[in-house]
Amino acid sequence: MGNVLLILALVMSVACASQPETPEATEPAREEQAKLEFFITSRGLGDGANLGGLAGADAHCRKLAEAAGAGDRTWRAYLSAGPSGDQAAVNARDRIGAGPWHNAKGVQVALDVADLHSENNKLSKENSLTEQGGVVNGRGDTPNEHDILTGTQEDGRAFSNGEDHTCGNWTGNGEGSAQVGHHDRIGGGPNPTSWNASHGSRGCGQDNLQGTGGNGYFYCFAAD
Image (cartoon, rainbow, N blue to C red; front, side, top):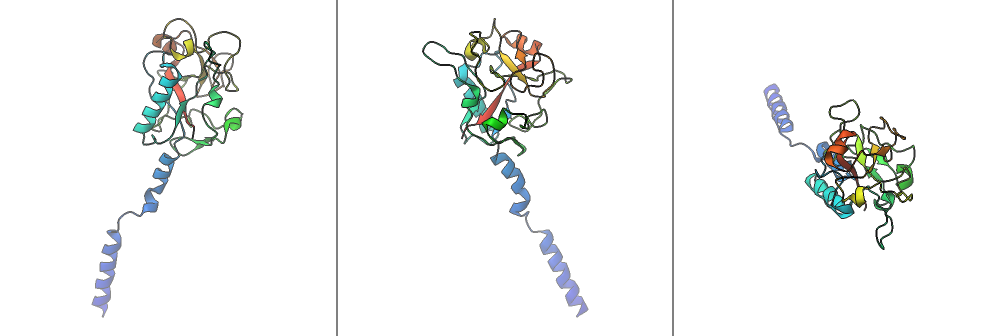
């Protein structure tokens, strides 16, 4: 009888050890990826602030999101644009949907548009991640890449002072300036802790963006 019980115990032990991993064990990773609604581009377009306009920037957001397995959303670049011809100014805050927004790790960075533009948002070097969940270099890293293109004021609206803060509505790579924010919330400029409106870039070319602590990155949000 004792031998029979021992054999049964061994059989049950082997059976339990060979059971496949349960769906619950892998669910958190899938859930985080499914929630990807906000990221900083892991790479720029390589031509300074010439992003191909708002449409080109949106397409870049979508391409990176697709590579990360989140291409089934409507992706918008967080960029403002000035008036041009018969086209009115475009506010970054009006392009990105209603929220909430989670990063690649599943952390909610903002509940809605008002929360995003308040002191309650969770944007920081640790939370403002790339589409793959990577941390973007900040002040003190080499190279510093904390300047994120926005072209916007702190409230997420386009400038109305008649000056160009968007390098020709994101088509220029020479003279001019683009408004940037600091994703790590530190640095120089009039508003060093602002994630979206710290200062203007030195110019619009790739070298100019890199020279002031950036690399042509921008924020992307799921608008649906």
